[in-house]
Length: 439
Image 1 (spheres, rainbow, N blue to C red):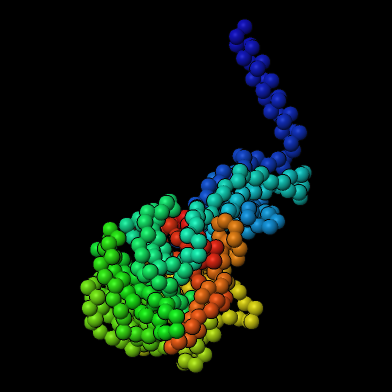
Image 2 (tube, rainbow, N blue to C red):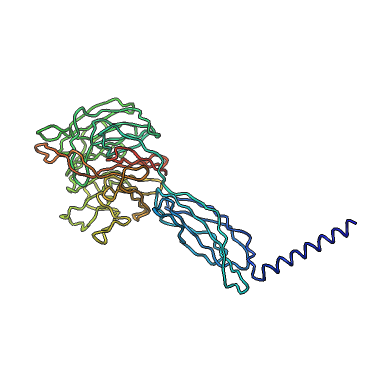
């Protein structure tokens, strides 16, 4: 009996299969299921790389890649690519915006109907992610107004226009100490942006701070202070200049910039050399690509011809020749587009990828460049968490360097630094906090 039963079962299966084919018709899809998608988000390229399996079926028409910007005011899927070859199973979405959450799906379309003149689709599951998402934040002491942040030995040191001390944190934002460099008030000057205290760390972990001490009715007093890595104050010395603005350390060479000169010192504070520099409005100065690099605001009286700020790498200390220039001029009076700098206040470099992160304070955002071209950006004005910045606000500034008088007025300011893992620390000045974004 077993053999006849098996034959009857096989016959029934064949009959059911034939009935199924008759019901679906000769133009049935025959796809082997929806695409199975994976996504890889690359911050160094500001991209999302989508890959999926090839779907098989003689009725295949195309793949459609759709993207949803979850943080948008009115989120909705948009089609960003169509691929008609079933073997094309990779798509790279380039130029995505940082600190935004994206979702993607891939739809496989196929023909239906007796004539194949209609279509249907199978949709993949969603894949999601982003680049440089917001991670955490922490507040600064009241009135601190952070303008510079630097990272060394997993310690984040923050300087502010409103305080005479460096406040230090671990990477989670827990305060680990305060190092006081003056008992007086900071004398701050507004050039391109707010010039307050600045700092740098040498290879031995010593922290150097340059600052100007405010004295009512007299010229501000330029000073610099050295701390060892444990926070012991080693010395404070005067500087022979009008107003000190920036400090940069390369190997054992220390460079300090004032309004129209660059001075070189050794690590003990001894004067080595002096270099005249053009009286440009420089909002940030760092060592990059074996040279000094500066965020420069055009004055309109120089011969640069620029209409907007640039990040310039110089061939020499006197800044007579440039090696590279980053930035562009506006296309119109209302231009706020990508890569246009407006009153930038600070920058940081990821040496591994050669990306440059700029606090574009006048546009309330962070701009990222790679090989002198715009890569991505994030941020908007506000006080909320995660990518809302207030780089514009009121601070006490000197109106006259001779008399030392000062008053409150609206200025722009903001700082940025990267740690060894690529995490990004932003001094959100007028929200009085530090914001941290993932590598």
